[in-house]
Image (cartoon, rainbow, N blue to C red):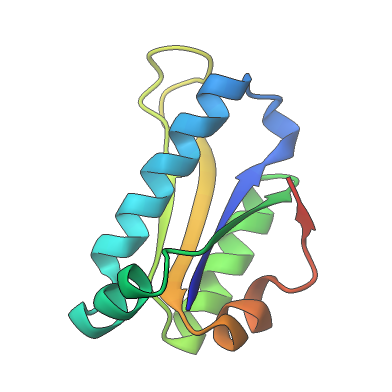
Amino acid sequence: MKQAIVARADLNMGEGKLAAQVAHAALMAYEDADRQSQSAWKGSGQKKVVLQADGEAALFKLADKAEREGLPHAIVRDAGHTELEPGTVSALAIGPASEGAIDRVTGDLSLY
């Protein structure tokens, strides 16, 4: 079991902003998962990987693929209180789900 969080590298977010967006995405996707997946992921150490993509279109393409695969996922739109304009799409989380299922969607992305 694992979760993949994909953040937009093209936004050049500061470290704190990036950490906040990743945290928002991770929690939102966890809440989208069924109880069995939540429990299995929590019981196996809550494995996560943070990956990068360039641009909003890339995140939506990955979200569509996750949707087709039946994977829990969530897109983060920033509130605009600090570095980003309100509504900016900043991150996507996919999972928790099996590593194989996550890798089918995100396996070609680079680590952040």
